[in-house]
Length: 316
Image (cartoon, rainbow, N blue to C red; front, side, top):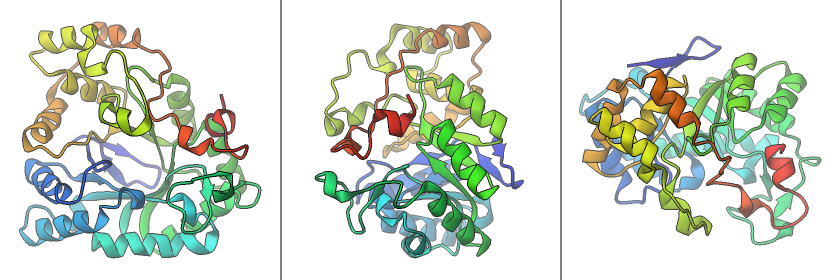
């Protein structure tokens, strides 16, 4: 399996299974199927509220001999209400307990946004904590301390801009191993990818198909879905592949890891087969023309007051 080598020397499998929006009663079987098919990278997060079921699937897969623990790459993420340094390790330990693991392979700061303790999603400005009160650097120091205690082999960030990565790196002398961000042909983020490469930060692409199933949740009205775009469909037909496979292969061709989500065995297997799809220079050039700087997960749920804004969140 192709993998990305991190600064620590760890190798993160390039293709993984995402678990965002995978409901209880569905995610257990999805994880079992994925591991049986060959996936070794499972992406989780505390806020997904399904880590206990993922943990049962991991336990049963290991007991069944479908994989060995040292073959798996399990990622989870620190939620925004646990940014205070004293809350980081307890939050990580809670994810470990739910996932039935002794350590994570990767633990990420989920968002560069701080919420008051116990707040899952904000209802108003009073639920936020300014980063002047809990700087990202102090949260990052606690993440590094958890890694030193062997609770996570590597630590990183998610939804961070170049400036945010530089800020925590300059403050601590240690750069995040990974930055997980939204990446697809409508939001290609070439400058951020280049910056991460220069900084030695691996990149994981989430919502690689343009997150069509989050439109209703986030109040979006998508016009042309990526999976229905004529360019993507033409490339898929030329390669006797599906549009989804083209989008996953595009992410892999850009030297990012990618974590498409599905709860259907056929689609999980189809996504896995995208590893064998080689896109040529003409295909990559045609897809490059689809850039429209269209964030599907644009962070609008954090803009309930003056604490956070598109400028503070995305540096743009």
